[in-house]
Image 1 (spheres, helix red, strand yellow):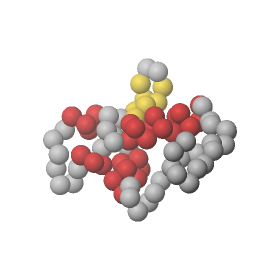
Image 2 (image 1 turned 90 degrees about the horizontal axis):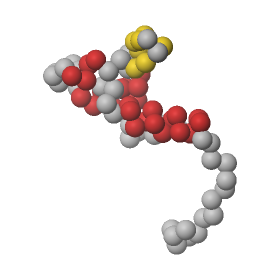
Image 3 (image 1 turned 45 degrees about the vertical axis):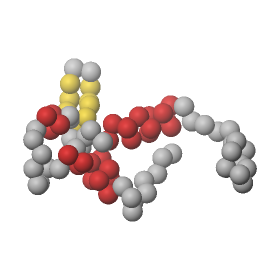
Length: 79
């Protein structure tokens, strides 16, 4: 399960919380209509859905392909 580092991801957290949802022919999906609009002081680029796509991919990967194997750890930092 991925977690947010709240101190370093303010923009990502806000973008995830404010992402809209639309209903299309294949069901529900993220509303990406605002990505084409010009940036304003109220609508910053980093608060749009562009940045959430990488997190979506990470989250779906963790849900569909969970990794249960314990990785060996060495103090040298090289596996």
